[in-house]
Amino acid sequence: MHISGQTKPKKKHTVLKVILTLIAVVAVIAGIFAYKQRENIKALIDSRTYSSEEISNRITESKQQVQEAISVYDLPITRDFTLEEEEKLRKGELSAEEAMKLIMAPSTTDGTGTASADNASSPEQSNAQSDTTAASVQQNPADKIVANYIQQVYGLKAYYIGALGQLEGEMRAVYVNSGRDKTKIAGIVQSYLPRVGALESECDGKIETLLAGMRSELSAIGADTSIADTIYNAYINEKALKKAYYLSMY
Image (cartoon, rainbow, N blue to C red; front, top):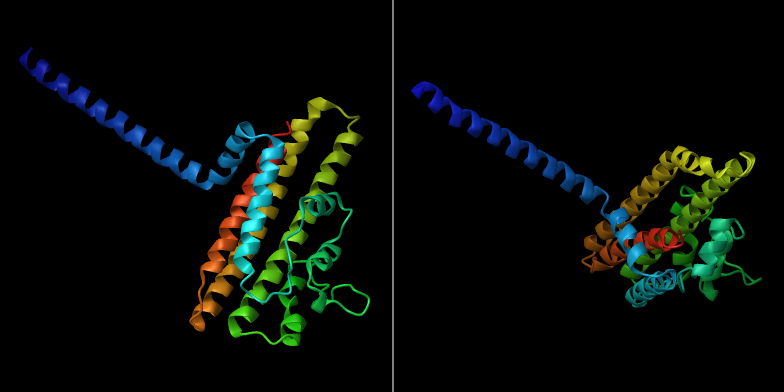
């Protein structure tokens, strides 16, 4: 009896240790998941906290903050895309090239009043976006660097908004072909999630690469690199707000 009384607490202690270890593991996994999904979690929370109009206003404010930050540089980009223009891009009513022409400075347009930068049609073409523009204007080194990368960032933005819109169009077509069977909506959306996720990850990667290049080149000439962080934070914030905007409609 004495031996049994001694072993019992040890078993309890062992079980308690295992349970605490499992709780710790679960907590770590949950923390990692939450960290990786923080943008989507924020979007979901915002969609339930704010109205579509309020979220739209926050997107506009974010755009204005970026414009204020880059206004100190001599750039060929005069403004961001409006929400209306982004909707047209998403719906295929406006091409990436046409959208880029709308936000270019007059000095970058040809004699007909259209922008000479036609390289927003794909991520690959966007790499050469500001070659002619930067060369045509006398700029200091920092301005040239920022102008080069900013133009590419907006080109990518236009391209991927259009690309996501094309996927949305495909999903709508599948739904229509199903006889507009609402019971199939969840399955259709689920089947397209990998492609949507891959497109988003691709865009994220290209943006990160561009901004890393911007930081590197600005640092090499001893210039302030904070503009790269400003653009990246605005990109992530606006992306979450856009998700919240569409979620708030349902």
